[in-house]
Amino acid sequence: MKTIGLIGGMSWESSAEYYRVINEEVKKRLGGLHSAKCILYSVDFDEIERCQSQNRWDQAGEILGEAAVSLEHAGVDFIVICTNTMHKVIDVIQKKTSLPILHIADETAVKILNQGFKKVGLLGTKYTMEQDFYTSRIKDENIEILIPGGQERMTINQIIFNELCLGKTVEASREYLKAVIQKLVAEGAEGIILGCTEIGLLIKQDDADVPLFDTTMIHALGAVDKALS
Image (cartoon, rainbow, N blue to C red):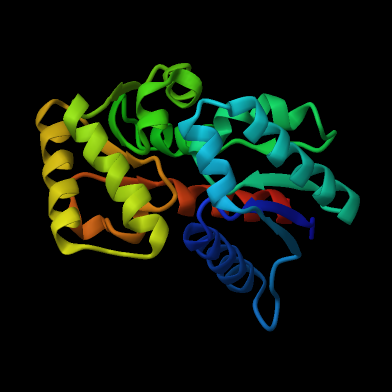
């Protein structure tokens, strides 16, 4: 079994889900008392979020790059960045380490293609929805991406940072996201990417009439595939 290096804390709420899913899946596949070999480097999310909001992305990348160096020195075999948004700086992180990094968008694209879908909606932070560091990798697989409108993107971003990252699940926010999903489906989305690792804490498959691609689950299971390959 390979050792998984997890860069987490962004937020720790979703990092805990990574740890749970990875270990449950290893136990499911190997049985008995098996659990995953993994090392978690959890950063201070306040520091990272300040870099995001102040457009200091390279500085955030340096912080996460140092986390990757620490994980490499600790003996992990590959790295998983436990957040969608910070894949924006994956190139900065990769320059710091010789280890492979399992890209969350690539893993998600494979799942979408396996369903035979060509058009999906995307929910995430404003950075993930509006910038191309994430969507371009999905589009490279000839998958069209639909995103919510401007005010909807702002509201979703607020739900993520002001509620979900603080461990709060608000029923009114669930209903709001369900309505946004319905609107994207009406525009032709065959499925919806939950492109923020916290959204899956609030929205479940029962909340939508089309398949949901929970990136936390997809990424964590991809890590298990790689660890056991």
